Picture (cartoon, rainbow, N blue to C red):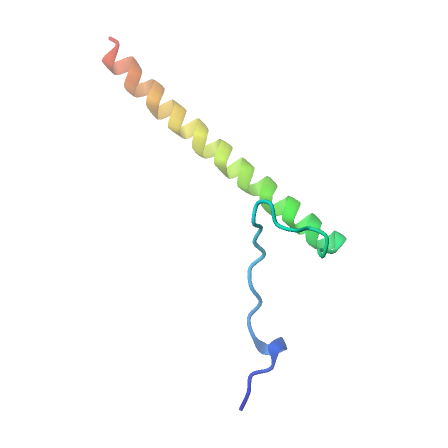
Length: 63
C-alpha cells in the first residue's frame, strides 16, 4: 500500500543562503525571516557567552 504524500511528515522549514526566493510565497518568506531572526539571536547569545568565558580566562592569566 503506497503512502500518500499528505500522510508523510513535512520537512522542517530550512533556508539555504543564496537560494532562489522567487518561488516562495509571502508566508514562506515570513517564515524564513522568523527562522533566520531566531538563529541570529541564538548566535548572538553564544557569542556573548564565549566572550564572557574568554574575558574571565584573560583576567585570571593577566593577574
